[in-house]
Image 1 (cartoon, rainbow, N blue to C red):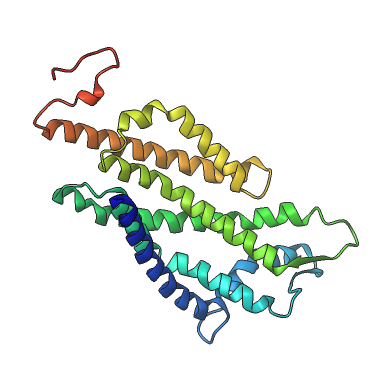
Image 2 (cartoon, rainbow, N blue to C red):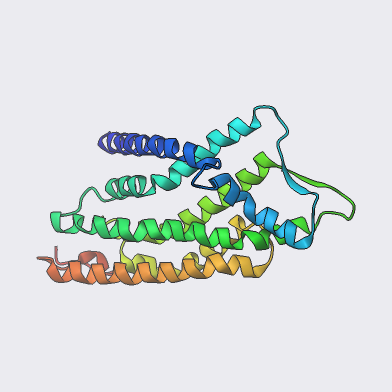
Length: 261
């Protein structure tokens, strides 16, 4: 019950920051006097590629009267997730690492400084591959046909891809957090390196919109590098913890070896 209460409190706090971020997102979704608007940048890869190819019949299509408002609300919430990322990422860290010592809690600052740029960096990589996705998908339009793309489907597709890349880049940092919380050892991560490689490529294949290997590698290879860095950090932390411990680390014994206790 204590864990469930802690989870409820963390989710509630993250929700408050998400709502505040969504309020900011509402004002930056559409074009203003000082900003082109998030909507403009999300549709830019599609329209830029269509312009390069001379596809004058490619456009986002609003099929319902209130669809513009619905998309603005959805876009504001999506922007809120990004704006409030430092706060809900901290709540994630605070939930998975409740048993840290006072000295180890100082690493929370480093966790935030590493996690937020990785989350935003993953989204930036996803945005950079969107033109390739558009070129692959639009070119399937038959000659003479009109490609009136539903604004709701297109924006949902783009926003899911960007968030998937961001969360994918966040996972190695979560592994480090679990290690610092004494829930996952570096050796356990290292033993499962084959599974990590497989899941990285599987995740990349599922979230990338095209079937070309280049786009998949743009996500899979950075993920593998991040997992490798996370493994090294976890192993180093295990060694530091064992060195400073008052008694031997019996968790590293083999299954058929008895401890001194």
